[in-house]
Image (cartoon, rainbow, N blue to C red):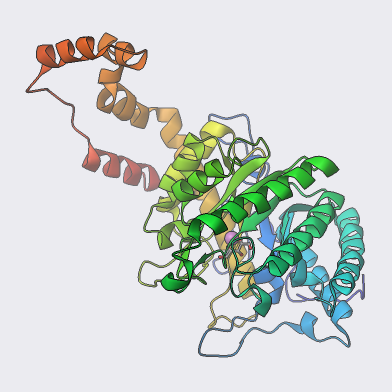
Length: 450
Ligand code: XUL
Ligand code: CO
């Protein structure tokens, strides 16, 4: 440690205490050792929470119109390396006090970028040594590492899909280095988000789209090849986001990302997966649960950036999760999968600019952990009662269980299909889609009567 100083002196370790006086900083729902009904797993196992360095300890809560408002005493330091180390300490103090096991970081969140690539790598090595010490002292773990390929002006015209091979090479070598560091810190996965991989002026890309998408594939395959070469056993996880900062990002939603990965031969690679973020689904005009379902349908769901957006705001607001209802269908799926066995729930979420009490970051993370815990318990209850299964399997999709369903799925000739059409149509009796009944069912489980 650079000092024995506490960066959040007013807050102790946060207990699970459902009966605590209102306004106490406690978990009311998240109890890591509680076994979730109908499963053999605990809440802690099903919800592998993580905090992220960039929002947790680097983001001063500035917005487009105003300076930062958040007190960040760890940023006051005589030199950039000390500042980086103090950020690491503040991050680990947050994890320890909240009982969160994982963190994520971009290369230059914690290590200062140097004047040369060599100097940047040296700074990264110094910070990595420090992180390794903190991990050993606290037992905390790295969820994933990634590269900041959006802040520096050299990336303004793209990286993998950009206009310049020098930038491509620079960005890729930063990934190689950060991948080595992620492996050294025993990180679970490595994220590739593409904020600057997207459309700008339409006139400047109309001739080059196929060309840059080929580069996108080449870049990803080089990352995966290097991961294989050094024996990184985590996944390279792509994070879709439709817009912001670019007008349209190529990896715009799950379906588009799967298509790009397939075109590039990346989808077929065992070490490629997806990292989904709730607010990003909203920006694409999609339900988060739909995105999770789509990733699962392709067997590529690995990790989640947990946060939520605001339907009245058109950009990525990264609020800490606080709406239970939206997470219930997500948890119904994750309960089927036994959680996220190879990934995490990283809070890619930040404080509002209005929130300036040093305790606010605790309220944000505690609230989000409790929100996911409530959704997990409600989903477990719905699952164990089996009513939703009854409606969906036994009623809505029941016809697929008949012999005609079996025959179609095992392959029928044109004539056999046509005969079936003559036999069963034109009026065909269907079950109700039960839209309202399902809505009532969810409310009944969230707020049981009596
Ligand atoms: C941006 C975003 C990123 C990635 C990592 O919206 O979500 O922070 O998670 O680069
Ligand atoms: Co994210």
